Image (cartoon, rainbow, N blue to C red; front, side):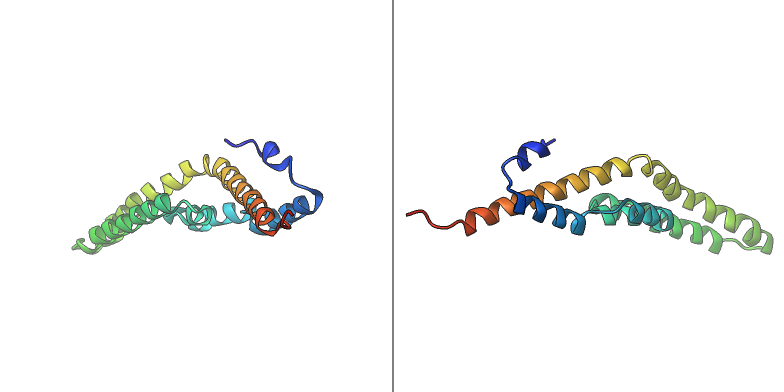
Length: 140
């Protein structure tokens, strides 16, 4: 983990103001993350928001496979009793896997949000420092 204070120590007042403005503009919000988790958590929407594409895609694949398995069991039901009783039960059983993953994920996404926002801040600091080196007046 990078020490943010050591990265910020050589920034002047104007650069710190730029940093603050850019952080507010680019940072990922806690409320947005939790709303995404609540409404799209079973297929990993909150992970897409955090930029965790690998985990998000894996979560989506598990969700789609669970839907396919649940619906295929529902489609294989032959009598009305099987359709009414076993079909929704099978669908619920298979959808519980991605839902359980989302519940477990709830314990980790807060820490991941903090890491993502720290990464964003480090990137902004590096961008500001690179601007400084390209816009510095030439020395005689």
